[in-house]
Image (cartoon, rainbow over the protein chains, first blue to last red):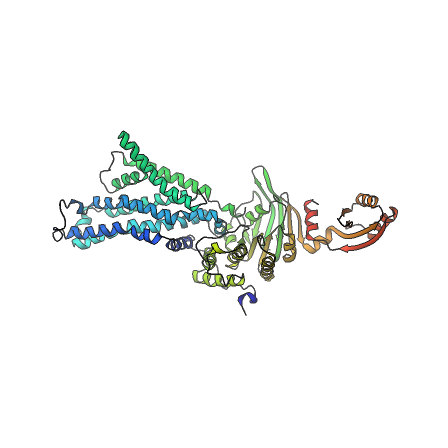
Length: 289
Length: 303
């Protein structure tokens, strides 16, 4: 007898309150991202700088063995906070992060708006907070793997290859800088992507928005800076603001003579705007139209 | 009592959406009817725990609608009217996902998803991408996700919309089967009155934010009026006027039949006396089965 012929049957188990009610959303989001076209290519391609920097750490400890390959100064191979700052604020890494958002994060909310799935989410024992945390955790997962994990691997490999704790004794604050900057970078990109994703029901528009806003503001900065030579125009660019903040956190000289807290305030303002827009756009009460 | 509401009021600004709704619903299938703007959606929002009433109190499955909304949603299944899906996944993943969100362990949710998809008639296509589903399949999918966690109370919003006659019949059979389980209460909001009549034993009719009628469909039909189909010979205008003056409601159909709604307190003999006085010959006098449509029209005050 088929299940259908047997009629409706009850489930024997007991529904339980989850400690992390948002976890199924995150887990599903991560699995779905890997099913997307080009995602694996872009994501694993984003790890290229991490491998290069890891190789750099190895070479820096065996500099005499590689002397014949290196012409000129070996200063760039000195592993110090500047080395970390170079990795974390590199144009390539930031660009690849934006590309990851374009492919994996654009549809996180816009698809739910388009296909009315918010109604289904909020008819479950799920608060607006849980829904947003679940979606944000997907972005956190991908971006933290690209920032905090390589950051710590750099430190561990440096300690292993140098055979002592001299490095960490010289820069005891470095692990905290890695954590703080990784979290700031990831939080900003997370709110940036979710905010834009909530603005449209069309995932393609959102993808274009995520990419175009990042690129356009950088071009705008370049245009004004080249013409007027005023460093304050650096505040126009998301990329430069993130780099200025990175320079401060890794105790390095910023590329533009603009106080780091201005960059921080601008990024904070964007995050606040994103948060309030998200709160107003995601409404559980829309469950019944 | 599965649903118990007492003097519920809810306003959207100046608009009074619900005014003093008092309801007590127990087992079985209940139809929720009302014209657009009657307050059905607001009532469902309150029952699902999305809105807290501004006045009044209530319990759904024993949980307070003001304070224990999350508990209510754990044990309630909801099938929305609109098509809902998550692109890029198959029906098993989709259904299991919502089972997990309701509090089922992952493995159990997957196992149960297979069962309910077979039950809803999607067994063969359960691994197909949801974007490729037809309108009828999406409707079945919504039902599957609503019952995956074995809810104690099921809200179905227009469950047969977008379905062909065969699909509609099958969905109604499934709903009948589910509601035949004594421990599952089904509340169906629909504009298709014949669907409500075929599945539900009870009905709640809302009109302008107020309760227009509530109770067993069979009793409500009896209670308000008796309907007769009458064919006459002669000038019926005088008879119609006289009957209306006596409190009858009379409609003339296209094939010259009179539909006479006789108030409960009136005697049949009075009708024949009126016909005799107006010198009208009665050719046919048949007791007609009142439909839910008649009841709905009377409750909300439209023809």
